[in-house]
Image (cartoon, rainbow, N blue to C red; front, side):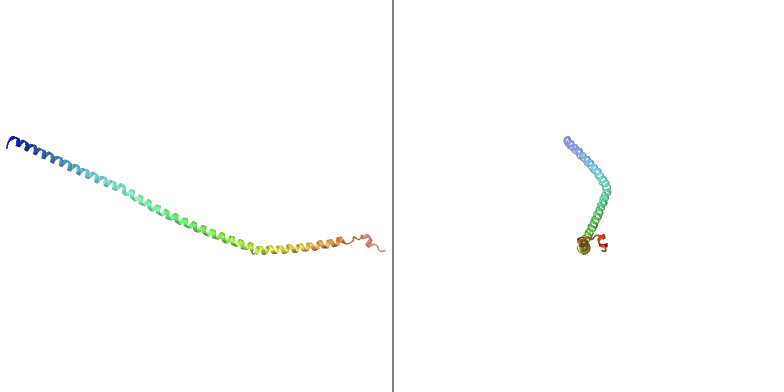
Length: 145
């Protein structure tokens, strides 16, 4: 082998050694990057788990609150419906009282009023009759003569 061949062989050996060192550096950098990504994933998992648990609890509480609110609205609706029904019944009872016994009471009152008016009319008629008689002087009626 000649000197040039050995020189080229040395350059090739040096290039292979340099490529091997670069590859080893890339492998170590890849391992370090993998470790950092793993640590980041673990930390993210640890940070997100409580957040997800809180979010789940918050969602459950919101669902429970919505269910309670729905129950309260249904109760209010039921109470309002019962109140409306009772008001309608009360108004119907008042109307039947006004059209029934109250009318009868008014008729009785009108009858009593007519009876009182008739007694007054008789009294007034009696007074008119007495007023229409000739007035006799008391002295004349006592005169015996």
